[in-house]
Each structure stands twice: as C-alpha cells, then as structure tokens.
Image (cartoon, rainbow, N blue to C red):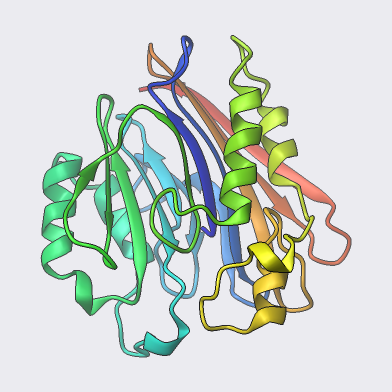
Length: 253
C-alpha cells in the first residue's frame, strides 16, 4: 500500500472506513482479494512473489494494513518480507498492541514500513522509523510512505475528500473508489524530498499513480459498522487502459 485513508470511531454508522491504494511495479505477480485456501479465515489480496499481503482482515474482525516507508538510501536487499507482518497478524491471536510490541523488537531487520493492526475495539500503529507502539485516536487519518498523518499533498487531499464522504449516514462504496481514482499531480513546491529526485517525486505525488512501469495496481474500500457488519471491496486496474474489475465480500464478524 502506498496510500491509506481511514476514519476510526468517527462516524455514527461505521466504526472503521478505509479507502486505500496499493502502488507497485506492474511486473510483480499478485492475486486478487479472496479467502486464502491455506488460511480460510483470512480475506486479502496476495503478493505472489513474497507470499504476504498489504491489507486484509479476518472473519473474526481482525484488521491489518501496511505501507512502505520511502528511504531509497537504506534498502537492505536481504531484509525479510514486510507483507508477512500483515498476514501473520491476521492468523495470530495476540491483541494488536502486544503483536506490534513484538514486531518493534525486531523492527530494524526490515526495510522501512508502517503497520496498522486492529481488533473490534482498538487500532494501533507502529512504524520502524520512530519508537513506540501508538494507539490510533478516533478521527480521520492518512498514511502514505512516511509516518502516520505526515502532511504530504496526497494525504492532505485524501483526508479532506474522505471527510466529505463521511458526511453521509450511509456511505456508498463507489464514493470511496471515486476519491481514490485521482491522478492529479501535486505542485512541485508542495512535494516532499525523499531522495528519489524531483521528477520521480512528482510522478509519485497523485492519489492514483500512473507511469510506464509502476503505479496503482488496485484500490480497496472497507466499511465496518458498529455492529461488525463488514463490506470489503477490491478494484483491480488493467494497466493498459485502466479499465477495472471489482470483487466484494460481505459478512458479519
């Protein structure tokens, strides 16, 4: 995932609302979201190359999502897969705070990442570019390839658009997909400097990224009501013409 926008305990109908884009190299093999054969309680897409996932939930209501932290000068080629951090939580029985505290102990073995884990009642965040596990406060939040709520242009824009969607008592999931399909680049003066150069920063700046070799592969929208009714939908894009196909799942945790 390269952009996660979410509202936590901030809506009369939904305890969690998520709109997220996964950005990746087009050549990296991926399976669309489904319940996994070897872990039938887990609903998620799957990174075929490393075996983990970027975002998923379980039938019991456990939820996890991850973004990479952009720091090209400190990439370890031998580091373990970050996607396993998500899938391991989904099949684990530890509460989210305890799980993330364990991850923190080994956090520097991994390349930069941000990990959010939640249960029915709580949501916690850990990023290995800062210390400590943090409980996520109620409200609207955004996470890209820096720390939680770092005000990158896409995070600022995305949070504002999500707040508009949250004005409705019943949210149409298409409104979440619409806010994620925004390919307008940020002004150069607003771009962060993460060490990839100005041209690359601008290419990576939209909510929805398009480039010849890398970009937004899929969008995910999740609605979880206070009664733990779950709607999970994933929209996958054809990189040639950006036509799309969508899978969706509804169940109660």
